[in-house]
Image (cartoon, rainbow over all chains, first blue to last red; front, side):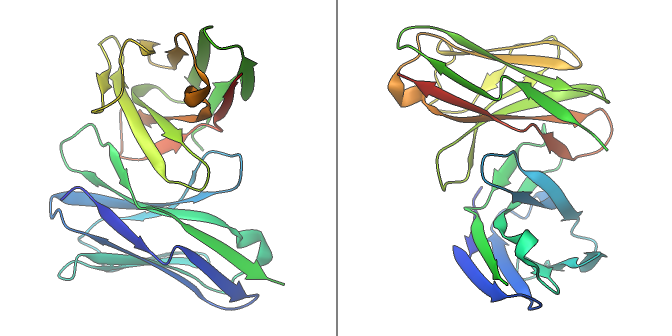
Length: 113
Length: 115
């Protein structure tokens, strides 16, 4: 019940295209859903985060869509660029806890020039 | 923005020695710090959660006597890998959460290689 399932495992997109990464969760007590971007040999960096009371959040080229009833959320990267090539992790944390993050398995995104 | 540093960024040690990794929150006070381990092409695995001034809480399967965590101040946590062995070779990443907000900010990671 603590799992967050992420797909696809890898994704190849042409420059200028839209990259879409999906995550699903079981525990309805999760109330905070961040996305992290990680480059090889570096720590994850927060991209964008959402709470269940909002269905969509946009920051620049990055958008989170959240479907509470389906217990799913997704990251959309518009106008994908080669510099976006990285591994992306979705995560979720529980209200009232120490806010430990439960991570998805990661998606390796490659944006072709 | 919130910055978390780690030192060293990489370390090579001989089997049987101990290695200490420092994690610092540079521009905020971190009431809670987390230590993760990451193997190549895998997700982050939470090892332990530490709150300033109290003992760390270890995840199931993580040996607390092997991975010693100290959170002595609101800006510093350390992870000591005791009697390291080659199977301890990994990428260790810390993160910190401030008093306010739910966001975890991650350090750049430490690559440990045990020969």
